[in-house]
Length: 240
Picture 1 (cartoon, rainbow, N blue to C red):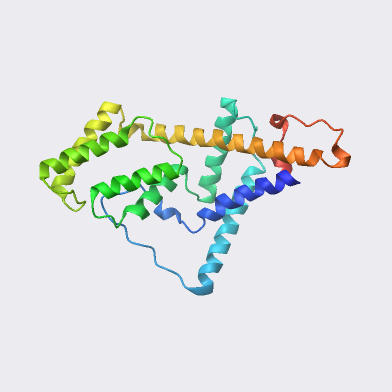
Picture 2 (cartoon, rainbow, N blue to C red):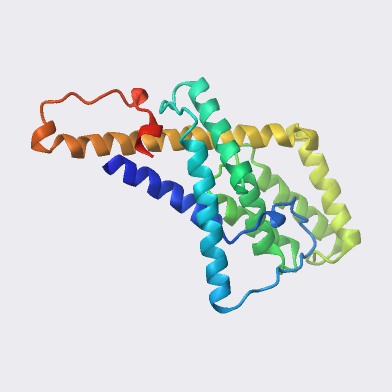
């Protein structure tokens, strides 16, 4: 029972946190432009709409999770891949953001009013750190070096509405991408790799929660002599 409560709590947190972020905003970020804000609702109707949307998303997701087999084994690539596939189905059917879409939305909302390129890049770094992402390629340093080069060339701080100078920075960024071997057509592959990393981390967390739940259960008198099952043998569908 304890494991059931924890598992459902995690999924409620996931779907509840995304309920007020509508899917029409899940578009590629236009880094140097502003997007129109959605029309605001007022009073009880807004709260009612949020509640109904959370309820619908949660029920849709739960219905899928009750049908799909998930193996809690973060060390098995097949199990990680299957879990990622299930969660992708959940997102598509429940109209939820993927991790990359959530990052894009965060970037869009936090940077839309930033006037200068330097603050924009520093904000991107802050978002990356807070999301727990690692700049393994050292791209941030190269991007800041490119900005320094452009600002030295134009003799002033670079603003995002300076289209001519922004074109210079974009050209420098293209050079960086080429040096790092990053191509736009490979973005779907990078997103898939990110989702697999997230799936692996979530399975590790589920394994930890399952162990804690079983340890708590074992402390009860009626279960003290029973051996704990292998977490990999647990079928989450039996706990939903």
